[in-house]
Length: 189
Length: 189
DNA sequence: GCTTCCATGTAAGAGGTTACATGATTGG
DNA sequence: CCAATCATGTAACCTCTTACATGGAAGC
Image 1: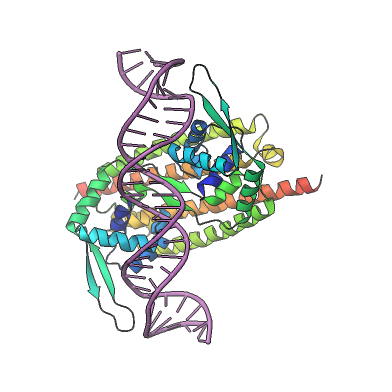
Image 2: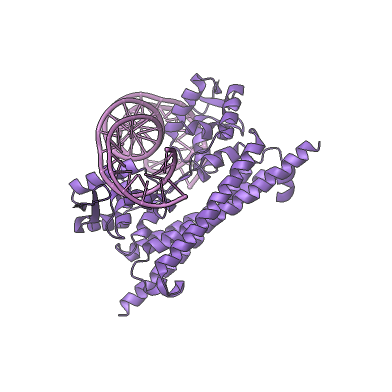
């Protein structure tokens, strides 16, 4: 019962279909919450039945029909209640880190490759998030936007995502270098 | 079926009971994997029945008896297989970030408090992880330890944890400041 | 012509959370 | 004296993942 709040928060940006929401969860929202599209369709149905969101049918000609959802007043109230309550501790899960933890027992070459691959993905994400931030703040500079912008929530979480991806990229690059050097040492024995 | 690998990786440090493992998952392992103690007991039983770990009973006088587990050769082989396979994308979940995403719709005061609280927790964690790193590398300096240390896996993941916590703390402090300034602006209208 | 995009789901099974049970010992 | 620590689980419930189903349109 916590995905609902992530969905409500994401829907504050405007109307979204389940499909669009799933895309949002793949990019910006991915900085702090992960969910598969099936979960989102199910959660939207549940939220609607509880009156926290409303959907309206949009008939399309060249595309399948869709339903656009927005947060209701009851949904806003629920978000406010959530905002005041205690948060569960944050939660991370990363198989690559599990592998690094076991680095002394598994094949180094494969691990180095995966770290480089991950570094490249993180690099691509930093660039993407940088562009998203520019888009969100528009013409004004960051300090000004943060002082007077009307909707800064998504901007703030993207800042966190950007910082996370940079940091993660740097770590991957560094660890790959460490493992490479150790391979050289072992090979030279 | 991925918790098993986190458990195997954690058990590489030596023998652990379910209870001790749960503590490890609260500190070092928490940098990349979260699991409740009940899960760990269940997973250890499963791993033992599959021959990937072995347990031995340790009778204690002043404390309840316990079972210490270590990884078997089959367990090591499973870890190696896992190390070579593709990793699932990393997974993050943070209710505080959900709240920040909805910052424009929820009470700012409560959010600022929670951000400060979180910053303090992150600060405490950076200090703890700093100490853990010193302990892991012993007398030698970091570069030397990373070149020639025998077991560097946990060190590398702790480095990531340290970096993450610092970064997270800085973000929390900054966002709290942004929200405070906006409150001042709104109050002054 | 093949793949990707749009768009919404269902169903089964695996995995995770919450609440509970037990009971001696050590530290403040 | 009260809380925390050590130590291991069970049971019920909720959530999440995996696999599948459908079908037209647009891009390469």
